[in-house]
Length: 328
Image: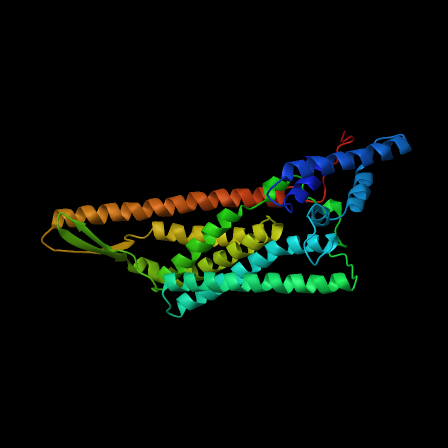
């Protein structure tokens, strides 16, 4: 992918959902026209360093995207752009804060559903208040004619070679957050799922065996780390080397625990009527096989993630990206 394409993809991520394609094409034509003018003036194709200079003039992708937002009441064009760009981070920060509060409330004994409803209500009111405070602050700065460059230290060399490769879907992060909260609450005994299985009018109770006891706290710590990582990915949905290294460490520990559990004799304790030996044996067998299947699936998933993270770590640095000799 060319440097120009990477820049435009970065700008796209800051644009409103409507008219993204039209704006990107307009910006692409504008930058290509500037590049052609430079080439005609110099009599040679632009080098990578020339493209860096041209994109530096265009500004940070967020700053370039801000120019396409309509001016809001009380705010000029410059402050309107900053307002719209600040909305997403504000929402993500509040979601992270109130998700963490909900988790702590669940750990403290509050009902899971109540914690979710309360957290969503508080986050909504905080978001409304945050919008008002943001508009008021930017309006004051606008009246004082204060201008500042929030992205002054940006450089085009930091653009990834393939932006889509490093993007983390926020839907994926949200699923991980919800699953993580529910799993941790269940692991700590704050919520319970059905563990009674009726078969042929007989009830069998299924619970985890003592094989899990040595791994209670390691699994708890790993779950909290992965929940924190999901919150970070939701706020900053881009794969980085630091994240890859951290995930490699988590994946390695998870694989070790999964292997140890697979080597255990029994992972579940099944209790039920002693006179129903055939049914008891059948329930015990299929429950054990189900847990084995889940652990093998976890191993496969984490091996895939390890491979993905290793490819990222062994790839060329993000900044070393070859620009095309001609973007026309």
